Each structure stands twice: as structure tokens, then as C-alpha cells.
Image 1 (cartoon, helix red, strand yellow):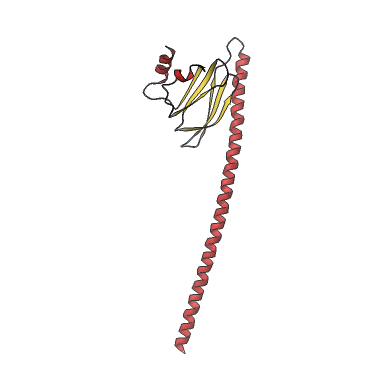
Image 2: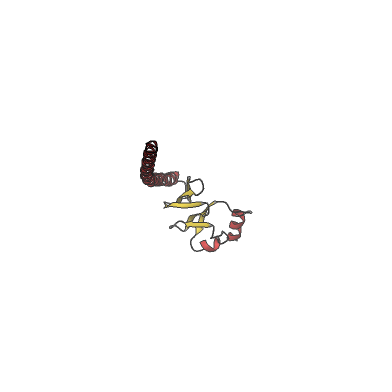
Length: 174
């Protein structure tokens, strides 16, 4: 019953690029969601709790850079392969009851963890970018030096040719 309901709700003609569910059970996770094709969708199930949040994403479209398993929250940082934009997905299955403070803390902690992970990734990506730019600049300097050397050799060859022509024309006039 549950599996059929899940399938009916999540699947129309095509699947979404990102699907978040709550109250997934570890024991029946694979069978409950077997209708979601494994070849195109990566599956992430929270590591703790009886009823867990889970995220599915289209792995042809996104690359997962970071998973964060928080207090009843599951967050991932995805890189969109085409645009190279970073996308944060936060899926929560918060503590029930009248205590809104606990739920607010859970959401706040999840967003703080995502923000820290984004900053760390950006710093790492910037370091990679800077290293690439340094290599690129080094290559460009080397290539420019090679081209300047070739231009100098070409000028020297032209001067030599002109000298040879002058000397031949000087002999012809004698």
C-alpha cells in the first residue's frame, strides 16, 4: 500500500531532478523506492533514526559535493554539471511536539552546517581555480617567451638574408 502510494505521488510521466522524502525506513528503503531508476538517480538516506529523511537526485545532472547528516536533517550540496552552480538541498524530519525551540534549533543548525560547507567548498574551489590560473599564467609566459624567441630568430634570419643580398648586389656592381 505504502509503496504504491509513494510511487503514485512521486511519479507522473517523469521524475523530478531532486526528490526529498521523510519517514523513510532503512529496512524497506530499497524496496519502497525501487521504482526510482538507480542508473540515473543517486540515493542518500540519513544514517540515523527510525524514520529518516532521504534525498534522490538526478546524477546525470548533478554531482554531490557534500553530504551532511544532522539532527533529524539531511543536507547535500550539489554541483549542477551544466551551469556549474552550487545548490544546497536541506531535507528535514523535525522532532514532533509542542516545543518549537527544538525544531527551530534543528533547522538553524542545518542551515549553519550548509553555510559552513559552502564556504569551505568555495575556498577549496578558489584554491583549485587559483592553482589552475597560476599554471595557465606560467604556460602563457613560457609560450610568449617561445614566440618572442621565434620572432627574434626570424628577425635575425631576415637581417642575415638582407646582408647576403647587399653583399651579392655589391659584388655585382664591382
